[in-house]
Amino acid sequence: MPYNKDSEKKVRGTLAPSSPSKTLPILVADDDPVSRCLLVKTLRGWGHEVQTTDDGKEAWELFRSGKVRLVLTEWMLPGMDGLELCHRIRAASTGSSQPAYIVLLTSKNSVQDRVAAFNAGADDFISKPFHYEELRARVQAGERILALQSELIGAREKMERLALTDPLTGLLNRRALVEALRRDEDRMRREGRPMGVVVGDVDYFKTINDEHGHQTGDHVLRTVANCLKASVRGGDYVGRWGGEEFLIGLPGADIIQCAEVAERCRSLLSGQRISTRDNEVLKVTASFGAAATEGVDRESIMDLVRQADTAMYWSKNSGRNRVKIYVAGADPGLRRKAS
Image 1 (cartoon, one colour):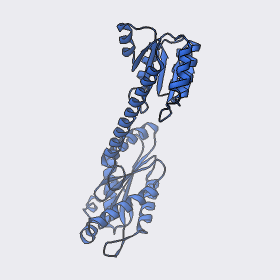
Image 2 (cartoon, one colour; image 1 turned 180 degrees about the vertical axis):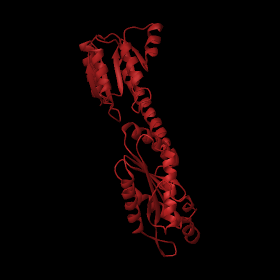
Image 3 (cartoon, helix red, strand yellow; image 1 turned 90 degrees about the vertical axis):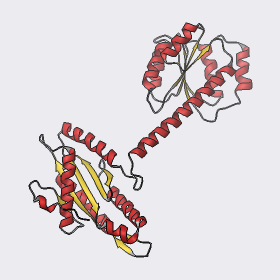
Image 4 (cartoon, helix red, strand yellow; image 1 turned 120 degrees about the vertical axis):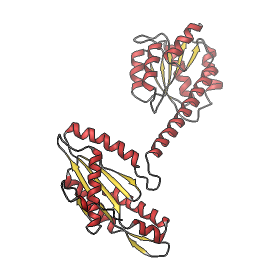
């Protein structure tokens, strides 16, 4: 872009005082030193954070640093031309939580050139020479589009979190637990490490709901959730399996470690007291079952969950408020429905 005093005046005058509401990290790739200097000065005058280079390959490396949201690039660059740069940036940012907006700057102005630019992944196209008011308008359009993309990505991520979260307790829901368990089953098998599961069920929960109401029941479930979260190891995860039943995934834990975690959960919970709407004080307890598997011929993860569930019912039938570990071959008659 040829330098002239009118351009400099535009930089210093009408345009520079008007700053955007938020600093935008911008990369300028232009091998013309005068053009690059004017662009950088103008963009910084508008309040943006600007990185600059005169080489296409270096522009690609700067983009890969992860700090760039908007790219202004010349078509003709040494090292890598603007079309290839657009193509790489678009491929890298598609599906990213930080998408990029690309504006191609060039003296090329045919329909074929514009088509080639957009096909390469450019979001916008400015023909040289251009007016700086046009540049500002296009940069602001890029800001708006990036802001909308960020909002959409945020909304999508929130929906994904909600789809995997139990709304009452804030824990993982059953779907999220199954996904995590299957993922860690494969990972532990590859690494030759054990995998543990603990299942806990609130004692007499139906009676609590019937006698004290669902509001108290919800309070009990949230209290249990908080106790379990406070008792697990780093890398473990807790979720609501359904109703008053909770599940803990313990990657890398053998049966002894599973039992230790379950006992910490049981002990912390049994010390809690909950006030009801009738000013009664409830002692809340839960029964826990633990199971773990390791070695080549290990059980599937859902079999492991069933084993932990079986051990939990052994705890129920042994008096509740205790921990039992699964032992293969134990009397299956002990697994009766208990509250």
